[in-house]
Length: 317
Image (cartoon, rainbow, N blue to C red; front, top):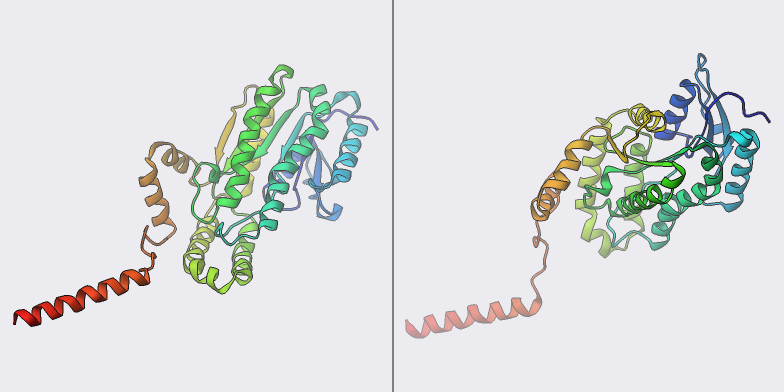
């Protein structure tokens, strides 16, 4: 197939949210987008007036066979022109107390959000090298400003940011730029799943585990959902991605979305105890030490001291 005159960009996870908005924005800008989706019917269609194209690309970033097939499809189309950009957006959410999250679920989160990103990057690097293309990774402000119960997701995004740091340096000799986009509050369909997933996690927990965390976790979920309902549209992130792919001198990181800059400044400037107190207040979490049970031995000792005091006072009287 002919490579044509378009710049070619692969975007993973385009069935909804940020990925879908990014594919549409790039196609509207005249790019040929290979839209990674689990099912071809989930791929977005380019706007009617668009000068670009969107080609569905069946792609599960955890499936080696699909990754190889996707790389072959892109190579067959671009030919010697190579690939101008890769947007690593595919990902899944993961919220909940770290004590309660099933380890299998945590492994799956890392497999999709981290290992899968490296796998597709490795598969497409030869094509990116041909075109001196760029790699954009969708991270999260949570890697800098991590509230309670967001540890699993933030861990995967923090590791992704570290991966990008190394990639940026390793690929610099070939002029392959690597950029991390760090969204904060963005309205996507993922917010609609939040309450359902939170309840499912609590239902899976033991009664003891549920009693430990359910009140605080539900408060956090309510706060988080309300913030994201008021967040920026995913098109804001898509615009940042388009800029990172086309500007002559892209920055290493871009903060986007409602509250992102403020959260980054607070995370960098505040001492840890003050930052913890701020996050605890925002999430309506219990105060440190407020749920420490009184040991039975201490209760017994306190009872004995009270009785001894009563006897002594009786003797004096």
